[in-house]
Length: 175
Ligand code: ZN
Image: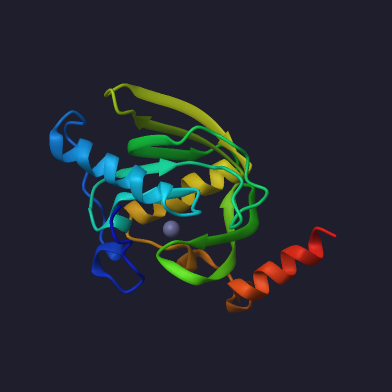
C-alpha cells in the first residue's frame, strides 16, 4: 500500500505522462501498488497521480461501500492511456468525494453517457460505453490524469459539504 497524495501536492496538479509500454516492470509495479492501495480504502477508483506516479493509469472499481452505498458492483478495471467522448451534452449532478481530499463531498456535473477507449494490462485497446455512476467515476479519475480535481468542476461553493453533513443528508434521503 502506498501513501495517497493529498490536495496541495504538486503531483495532483500535473498532466500525467502517457504510458509507452504496458509490459515494463515499472508500469506493472505501479498498477499493482494502485490495486493494493485502492483495496485498503473505501474508494471506487484511483488514478496513478494519487500514489505520486505521474502516469496515465487509472482503476475504476465501482462497488457498494460505506462511502458509496448505492454504487453498482463491477470488477476493478485497470485503464491505461484512457480517452473519452460525451455521447450527449446532457450532464447530471451527483455527489463525489476523493481520497486525496478527505472530509468533504460535493455535487459535480458530469456527462451521463460516454464512450471510452483505453489500453488494458495485456496491451489491448478496449472501447466501451459507460453511463451513470460508472461514467462519473471514469470522468473523476480521468480528471486526475489532467491535473484536475473534482472541486474544479463544482458550479457553486454551496454544493460543497462536510462528509458528516453528507452522511446525515444520505440518511434522511434513504428513509
Ligand atoms: Zn479523486
